[in-house]
Length: 176
Image (tube, rainbow, N blue to C red; front, side):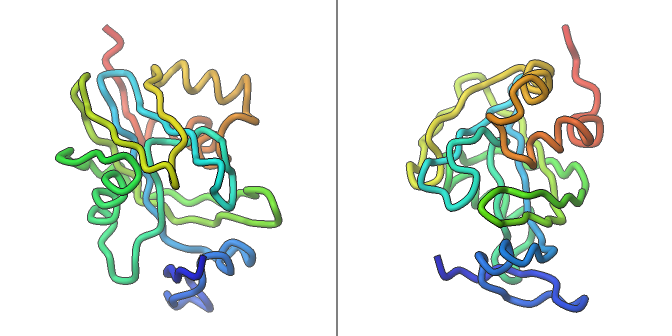
């Protein structure tokens, strides 16, 4: 895995090997997408071959932008690469920052551009097995409760999003 991603070193955005970014816990840009169908959110179980947090449930998709890639372009690209999802309109939900131990001596310290996207109930999904083991739709409030009851089943960043940033990401949902 010799991929370089942007990371801040001494205040300057610099291309750095992705593994080194996580070993050193360098602050770096990222995107996170939550695909919604009404009050339900599509979550993914990370592939067992992932180098960190394999087999844990995460939001619909997340990644690091390529050098010079706009966050929204990155979000659209990654939805297609991981889940074969295309044609959804990204709604920016702001930027948040977190730092979390993701196991194996690796740290995620991300400045995340967060997006939601509305999907039809019959949204076609085509999993990339190198990235995603499985997906499921879950009610947002059930997901919040589940991340508290069984934190070991979820990625650190999804637990942080649910515990600290629900209003910023999702606003008020119609619970009709």
